[in-house]
Image (tube, rainbow, N blue to C red; front, side):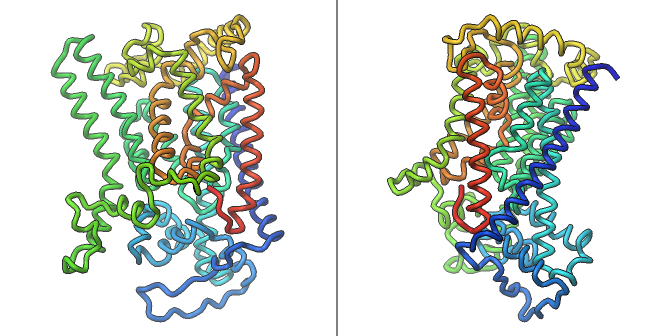
Length: 497
């Protein structure tokens, strides 16, 4: 095993251990805060009978205190996920929660953890299944995050720093609770990793499943759109093959549609259960819409989600709560835009030949490139890694700290400023704008927490000269503060993002 492969294996081992330790730390904090303070809302253990059952006998369990403790920790959206896993979609508003997490929880509770039902009760087993599932998913997501970062940044040390920060991201409490963040992070990061590793069919499956975990998973189709756009450009203007461009566009459209299928199928499922078989005057308003989407209606009707609808003076504390993550997202986008303006504003079409070649796998994944032995992948990184790192160190040493907030003057071609990063920056920009202008802004912390550019930019700051490192330390302090504050408030049923 050469030095580079050994370094990568060592990094993966450390990240695996760090991810596990971070989850154990979060679970310990949850237990500690729950035992130290009384919950603000004590309704968490309440569990009415499923509507499909007229009467449901109470569980006779051997360890009722353990079961009660687990049920008491099922708070906020976890109540919906566990209820759906237990009883299915009973109420209209429950269709705002997509099915992948409840399905997985129900499966684990009926198989792996079924022997525990007589010991702690059915609902407690559902809760335990959710905790185990999400924490394991996070650990796997952290490993995939590192593998993806190595390919994108072409710098193992930068990828390592970013992955460690991801293990302690400010939304960590949600990745260790019964929320869909962990599954989404695993499927979205893993899906993009498989896409760049030339496993397009596997990538379609993973990214499609991300859309059945969280609604914003459908935005991952943008990666295929970006890739298809560059493949079509190459076929028309470089290869002069119009037929190939048509083939590329058809394949790209088909793959994007596949990513939308699970989300659209769930909307159809909601329409079938809620709207069909009712008289028009008995139907919910969304059933009569030209395009009946239950998700959009629920978000607007029950939660008041809509463009600028959250721009109220009384919501100022929530904007302040979300300001750190939104500021980090904005700075990362602006910094990339300033130092790589040609790449950013041309969507990668005006990249230099060197950058275009280095990003070719992401920009155009034609069949001929996939079979090319020179294709850039993890296997090709070891041969160029030390040269890249050496050039990076020389660049950092020669930069003038007054040139930018991070002190970077050079138009570096690796790390965060690589052309590879462009589609991720564009994706982050759309997500951040949606969070700020449309959604409940306080959810921005967890909504954006699975976006790789946030951690790549933070990793970039940590080794930048001048004020950059101080900003890196501030990001660490922000993450630590939100982990402590979030675990305290969230676990005791107090509002937090």
